[in-house]
Image 1 (cartoon, rainbow, N blue to C red):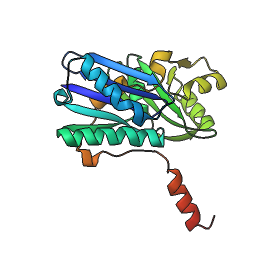
Image 2 (cartoon, rainbow, N blue to C red):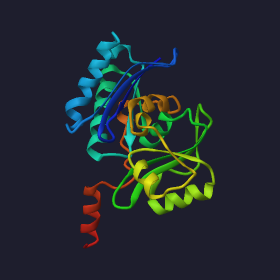
Image 3 (cartoon, rainbow, N blue to C red):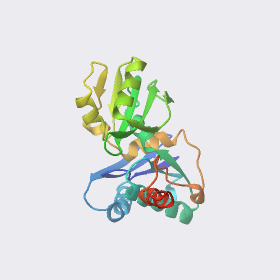
Length: 230
């Protein structure tokens, strides 16, 4: 089976093709860009398909990071996957950005904490136990204050690998001999993690694929404030 993975949840725009039978990534392209993902993600997809002599018709499953992350970036990635899935009549699936980050570091046998910046002192995070092949959640994906997350990890009492765009600041500010920081090439989001995480997810139709923000978007907050007279 060939999986096409897409991640537009952060500053990186990333796509990869994974051959599940050979357990080989045929291609991967990740670009840290100031351009909007709508300008760059489909050219990246076309490029890796051309490099591997594949077409979209060869793809068996299309997976996308569905959140948390950049609201605009997530909508662009999910919309692109929905369009391809519908046009090709191919199954798709959404993958948690936090889970994909952990799968980037799946070879680490132990506790992995994916931590992404939310706002102010808040972070999106989840803590997993890795056996080197699969992940087990040690908590739900949610928004933590950074102090709450540090306390949760300390209470777990295990050496913990940190990854995600909030991991460097967290590692620096909460110095602990229990913390290990993931290396730069596996620290941030990329489509390889999306492909690997997709193997443990249920496939859905294009109509069923949705974004998972973990917090309300600004428009929803503004509407609630107006209703509450704030």
